[in-house]
Image 1 (tube, rainbow, N blue to C red):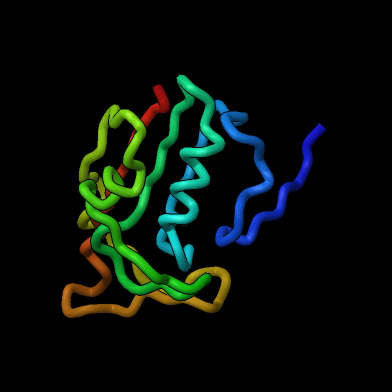
Image 2: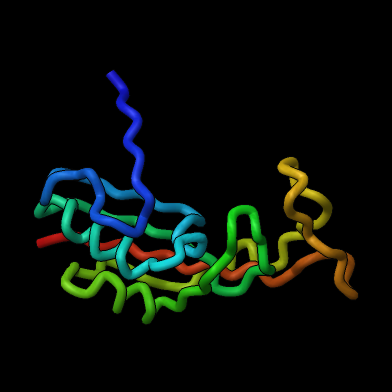
Length: 132
């Protein structure tokens, strides 16, 4: 049985303390107005021995669908998840020169063509941590 859980990412989440084994967040923390609240909630709900994985942009164009608020360095994520043990937190430049351009399917966002013919700076940051 799957259950849909709604949370506004500003107030306390509907999860119980230390009730979640794994938290996976990919390209979403930059769209939250107050990411420190989200990170505090992740720390609160994570079980001892639980793992959190977060991937966020470091260098990426503005993409306002939904609103685009933040960019994060590895040091920033380590600080936001203070109290967890860092397994690994690094830059990921694998897609750095990927050619991405055009209008996205949602029609609310587009990649403008730059002097190189597309957007070519796509650095990511990932964080793996655990609650001891």
